[in-house]
Length: 258
Ligand SMILES: N[C@@H](CCC(=O)N[C@@H](CS)C(=O)NCC(=O)O)C(=O)O
Image 1 (cartoon, rainbow, N blue to C red):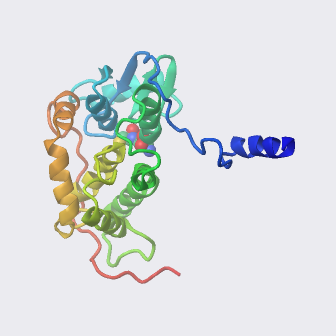
Image 2: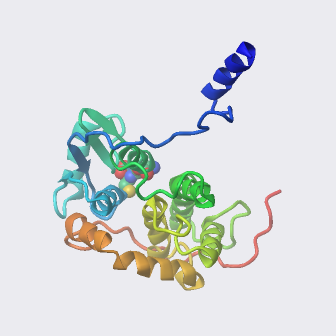
């Protein structure tokens, strides 16, 4: 029996013992929140954190210089010289980067369980996939296509998973689910907006091909918290928008790379 208990304790440390909780990514009660400051660049990924705080109804300080990306970036550089990117967020004395990590930190500490499906639901895993997919896969591929095709307009599609394949993956998911969070709007939806807007606005994909994504975007734009984010974080509309691609790769079936 003693041996069983010891084995169970060892397994529990790895999250594998059935008699103990297998995973506890959220605190059961909200922690006291120190001052949160969002260092922002207009029309960039830091909008995600402003929008998150508006959805959660939590207070925050927003730092940027209206219409001046260089000055806004100087403020970011001052607090985060090693990795000056937006969002940079200070939580008390901590300096945080990576929008997904910032969102998970804020929710798990200060709004446990909010904008997150129940842990035991089938939506939970899907929600986490999209929350990470947004930067881990989608943004990287969309931006890679943009950079390459700005230099050399494409004659054919990449044999690797490219931006169009990424959009189709998201389109197919939204055919069966109202939100990237599954049945309900979650933080995964907050993460997905930036890269999906980027690809459509800059002609990296043909936006008319993705009706489900367009319908989801229209629902997002109706959300009061999204509108409050726009009023506070993008008061002058698009600032420093990048030029759209003159041409994206022709659509059609891709030859598998291997
Ligand atoms: N994966 C990071 C990306 C951060 C990032 O690259 N942000 C852009 C703005 S959207 C930036 O600050 N770029 C500045 C630069 O590359 O010099 C995140 O999700 O926070």
